[in-house]
Amino acid sequence: MTMSTARLGAIVGLLASALAGAQDCSRDCLRHHLDAYLAAITSHNPGAGDLWVGFRQTENSVVIPEGQGAWKDITALGSVQRRYLDPVQSQAGYFGTVFMGKEEAVVAIRLKVQRDQVTEAQWFIARKSDPGLTGEPGKTPFNLDTLRSTLPAQRVVPRAQRMPRAVMQAVVNSYFDGITSHNGYIVKGHPGCSRYENGFPTFNSPMKPGMDVGNDGRTDCRTQGDFGVAIVALRNFYVIDEEAQTVMVEGLFRREAGSPKRRNHFTELFHLDHGKIRDIHAVFYYPPDSLPVPNWPPYDGLFALPANYR
Image 1 (tube, helix red, strand yellow):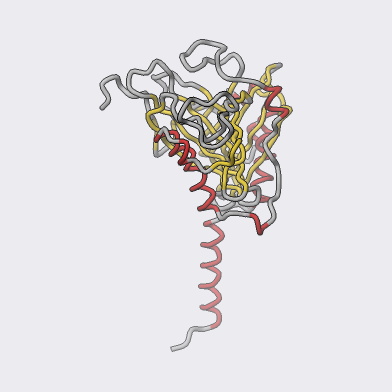
Image 2 (image 1 turned 90 degrees about the horizontal axis):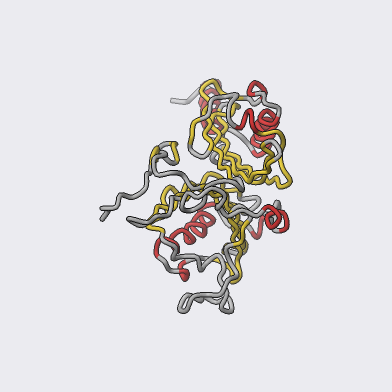
């Protein structure tokens, strides 16, 4: 029995539609939606953002109705603007700064696009006046001048130098494994690799005895492994930009039992070269124990560890 040309064409068409649905948005499509969304935010106009009817947005894990929060507060994009695209996951990322009135804040945004509309927006926002590690106002790490002088790369890496996305994720995951295991030797980073929290440098200080993994006695991105973190939870690799060899990943530092330090919820932006981490730029905030973080499935609420945790 042979299949008619018309029937074969219909089947091929259905398969093509299914494959197109698996990758909802190309790089150009993602860039268009990200730019339109950012323009809508800065003009206080949700109607211009290509938003889906079921659109959901969080800001530091709090759900924000359209027209409130960032829709009212943000007046312009800031002095640092970086965009990263992942058509495999139909997600775009923005890392940089925005003006909230006269105050310039450091932000990271995860944007989901499906059916040619923006369905999700997740914001990480850090301000100079924000609570720090123990909840004290104005104590969060923050340095805009340093961020501006150490800009994350915006680049197109030649194809011959690109790692596939699975390798990129594994290299970045080694950083979190190093923190959880308190062992910098696990981290796949270049000697001297840099790391910044809201622009504040967290490297190049004198190394603790026994922790030097090969940077002339100075800390780098591999040697920050023992600072009271019980586990790095979430590890949501929401943008793996193969063209830029850049990864944006959401995570949560859960503290050891009884620690007075708050959890850290963050996006970290990784640039990779030749199989290793070159630099990390993070947007951090410190949620109170009562706040459900990240407030996105499947991890709707990872609270602080109880004092009797075993």
